[in-house]
Image: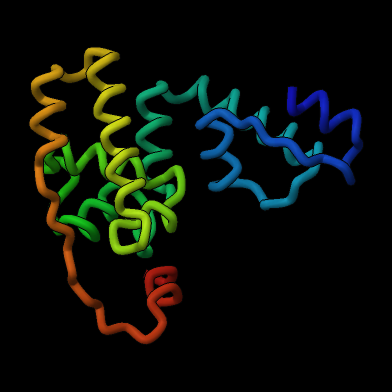
Length: 168
């Protein structure tokens, strides 16, 4: 739909997205951020090639390891360390669901921000979806919803954290 609408508008009027996870990964990793039909076609071709070479699980892992989670954390491992000071493999169900909530709007849902109630609702929605898809039991979900989460309060003492973490 987006491709057809953008084509009808021409390169100057391209305004719609509609990317798969693979397309988003390719766009953010290999292409310039311009919004043109030409770039969208390149994105589509690269995404097809990428999906021919890698499995869906590998593509998802690549994606989750490069997207922003807020607080200068890019990738799930960095987010786990930033918010819980532990490796991602050691996260509880409650912590993992909370981190899964962040990519939709990292600044808005930040556990250090003003929308913690909305973050909790989104975490609970993710837990409920996991149960409805039978990834976890209803009992595990109820236990995870009750878990009180403690976030890291580590301070880096850095003057320009965006620049420092970008360089890092």
